[in-house]
Length: 114
Image (cartoon, rainbow, N blue to C red; front, side):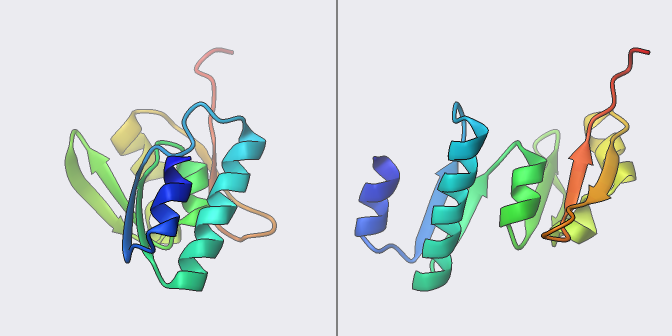
């Protein structure tokens, strides 16, 4: 509802703070598709805080990765989302693969348990 109110006001800049929190994955994709289509149609700059790196990779042109509250990387998802960077920032060893349709990096987590 709040997003719809913001869109009606036709802003040039939209700030979103975790817009997909508490949404099931189908609704996450639906919301992000809607924001992306609206952003492209209206030429709006959208800045979003997302903790889901896979969603960020699919929907964002550029990422700003923070480490301990400080910027540590900025660039396109393809430039930022590498296993060594994720290990350094998050302390976990992921598997990074290319999305088969969108050709954007996607992160698979590995369990520390065997």
